[in-house]
Amino acid sequence: EDQVTQSPEALRLQEGESSSLNCSYTVSGLRGLFWYRQDPGKGPEFLFTLYSAGEEKEKERLKATLTKKESFLHITAPKPEDSATYLCAVQASWGSGTYKYIFGTGTRLKVLA
Amino acid sequence: ETGVTQTPRHLVMGMTNKKSLKCEQHLGHNAMYWYKQSAKKPLELMFVYNFKEQTENNSVPSRFSPECPNSSHLFLHLHTLQPEDSALYLCASSQASLAGVGGEQFFGPGTRLTVL
Image (cartoon, rainbow over all chains, first blue to last red; front, side, top):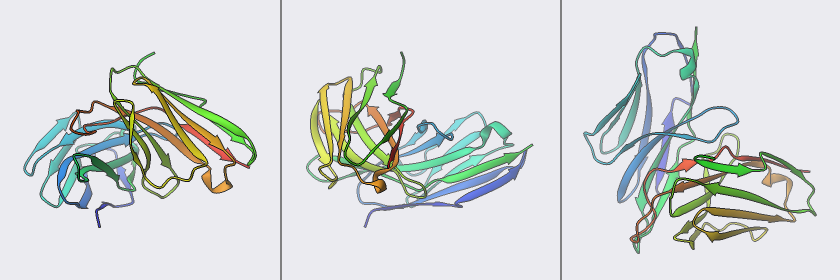
């Protein structure tokens, strides 16, 4: 069964304390892996797309990496404004040229000043 | 307006009411989606429209009825809902190809629905 699992469920960091969020997946025919940020009361905001193992993307304090089984979102020297829920999603082939999106439950990140 | 907009932002309805949620995307995309987001659960894909044609319906109850009149507008018609349907309903769009929907999705702010 296709599945996306994110860990930890929640994470509290001190400002400046770097850490990583994990997204492990089991899907057939991976077409892409996506990271989103979601603030309370808002829709998810797109961050990164990764297509193949070994690929890396960076944006400010965030860096996403991808292997054949998992992806990491590394947060370097986080600030309180980085507090949000981070969602991981995979796009997988679903036969007949169609695709499906599978989301994880997210990691709630809280950065303390 | 830019990005993906949704109205209303909040909706309270009784189980016998009929209401509609509206989504509009200003990104020139050709695929649109409805998702349901409940607490502690992953986003659940409800409907997908690719080039205005519905390509997925993940066994959603018939009390939810989508409508996509053009590639920029998407509606979700609601009738005789149940309290367990209370959730955040998100609309998204992406740039799809004729081979199938795909690519990163851009989400609206959502409609917070409460069914009494």
